[in-house]
Length: 248
Image (cartoon, rainbow, N blue to C red; front, side, top):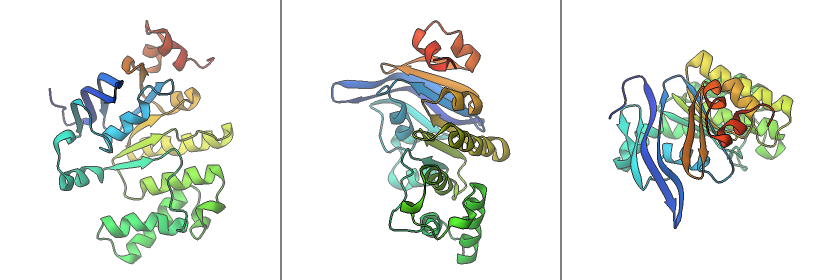
């Protein structure tokens, strides 16, 4: 079965192992364009691996993965590069170049991957930094940023190429509740104002329920629940019910 035109990401019976350890077992799910999907699960259950499969940093052992109408598991390097330009990735540690200013971190992918003029690059960097509340910090080095500011900077770099799909790996880990809520709000704005498809791995159920439209829950490599928060809450899987519960 191939995805329809409304699909942003589609997993079909995807499995992935590292040595003897199977991390994902025949996982299938669909993410509609403009939807926010939150991936929940205990540590080591394949959540971050799923994001790396979407961006093809890893290849599945079995199954197929579509990004829109492209089945990426068989694509060659040049074709894969084209698909990857649709995707932004907010890494858990922000993944900034420490020897570059914030401006340089954002301008580099624009200079390398687009045909924008220097004036257009400058304008885009300023625009994106303003969106994440860092307009006054373009000359700042990453080491001078607080934890919350680094997350904002990482988000800015993920957004600077205007991706259709945004992947976020634990975007609020290590942050206080107020700062975490601010990051959640920035992610929510991308979905509601730009119709960006969002796929987020998180342990923060409060933020997940605020941002997410649907949820997948992994346990021991298996997808054990998939649906809205209410549907996951009524799942017959105890792990899924615990992970989605605000009282957990």
